[in-house]
Image 1 (cartoon, protein in one colour):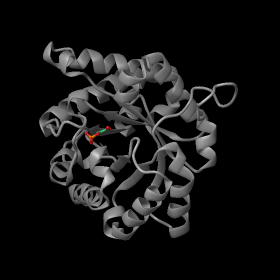
Image 2 (cartoon, rainbow, N blue to C red):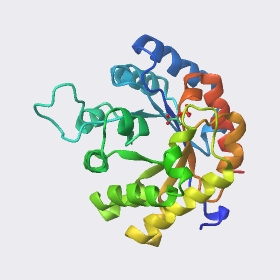
Image 3 (tube, rainbow, N blue to C red):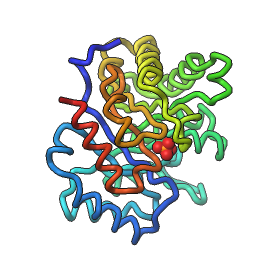
Image 4 (spheres, protein in one colour):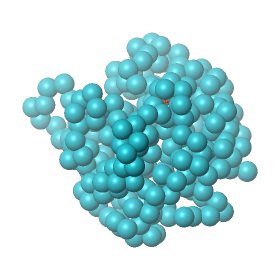
Length: 265
Ligand code: PEP
């Protein structure tokens, strides 16, 4: 739907999930910092998303060492404060200089019962607190097999965008993460990723207009590695990757960043 000449700046994000205690996280962030070269980070935005308990430590490494890496979180509460035992608010994340918050990851939807309504409320919380949501959408294998991929993506995107201020949509990141590709070693082909990301952009255009649709960044996520990143990022509507397993290994993650930088040339 867009031509490659007008592509947006790629965002490579590492979702550490529930891995690394704060000492391991410090080590991982330092390791990453030693490996990321200016030539890699120049044309690409990079974010890492540690567990909540690691955020303060990773913030200190990133800011203390001036690393070209943005701090991200994996989730947040709907409310900014109050009697919500065990929750961590977007307001608290913003105080730690978190820039990106993953919202609606399929593990949150499937394992913790997050509905489209809860996801929409979290998108609002992230934007209200001045951060960028990485809004995850994606179909299950069953939905794919019965031809429901487009319907599922449209419904998830419309629910989310319907809740946020229209003017904010261009600043958001949407991550297309087919559930069947996450952690399976079976990534979508570049053709499938492009088709889905182009469709998502079309749904955004239908919901809020062509201009924001041309500006919103759409990542692909699901079994991304250094070998499949460049072909994925050469697709006209794929503006980055959301990486799970491979982000736990600094060398592998930097290989992905490097491949993303090559794809911009
Ligand atoms: C993810 O969980 O967002 C993800 C993409 O995981 P993986 O890269 O391991 O498939």
